[in-house]
Amino acid sequence: MLVFLAVRMALPKGAASEDVHAITDRSRAKASVAAAPISVFAGFLGVGPGFLLIPTLTLVGYSARLAAATNSVAVTLPSFSAFASHLGSAQFDWPTVIVTSVVSVIGAWLGARFTAGRVKSATLSRIFAIALVALAAQRAWILLS
Image (tube, rainbow, N blue to C red; front, side):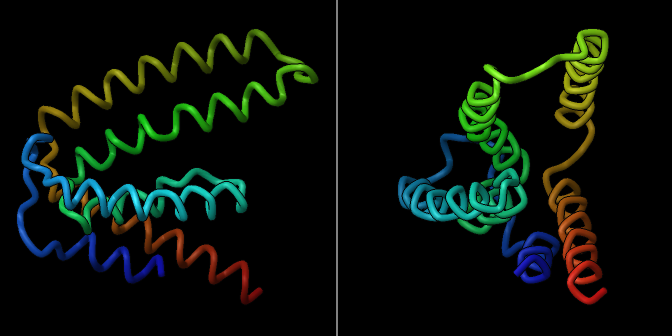
């Protein structure tokens, strides 16, 4: 499945619009219907849904940029609820938390500025396709060894 999604990401059917208003209600409905089982499946695996959600969103007409942005918003609530469920028993290494938080915010800001200004959606799709192939190879390696 990962290789299929990678091929679909690397060879898009047509240029998807960067404008969120250009996405049809039908595409939004398809994305919503697909997102529910993807999210449940990812939850059972204990992983984020982005590796399946982003390719699915691009298949229904979202550009890679809009798919990545949508995924970022979609994972916020599940991430927070997972964090909150462990909050009662969590023990924090505060220096590590502070350094990681600061570096993450700076990296996210720099990455967003760079991607928005210099990386085309088609290039982002191909980079994500390469990441999917690498993930599929890693999973196959683990299963076969």
